[in-house]
Length: 74
Image (cartoon, rainbow, N blue to C red; front, side):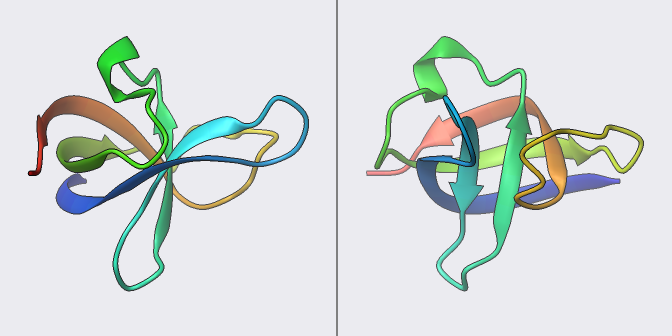
């Protein structure tokens, strides 16, 4: 399922953590294969991606979102 969502980049989870997008309403998406440019805590972005219910992770912080493109929000 394709999705466009806006939020803040965060580092969440156990151990070394995983990259996530947290929306203003508190929804959390685990970012699959996040590009290096997205790996900045606190960055405000809009992401276009694909929800991947077929992907299991150890972090289990929310649905897995495979990033297809993104825009930094000023």
